Image (tube, rainbow, N blue to C red; front, side, top):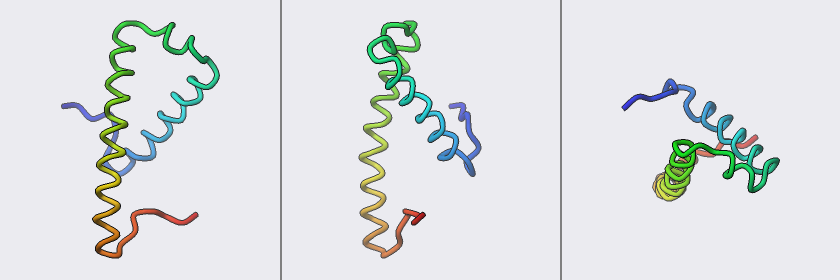
Length: 76
């Protein structure tokens, strides 16, 4: 599998990409999906599934970290 980001910045880069997608969804509304090619629509569906997996795994990791009294969240 090919990874588009270096491990030291993958969360930062992915966050920027997700913000770009969310902004496009907000600005374009239903046209966001209508204007997609077939392959882009497939990637959108896979991204949706990946986000669900991310949320589930993140919750498990945070719960595990909390049990060890280590917080992964950074206070800003």
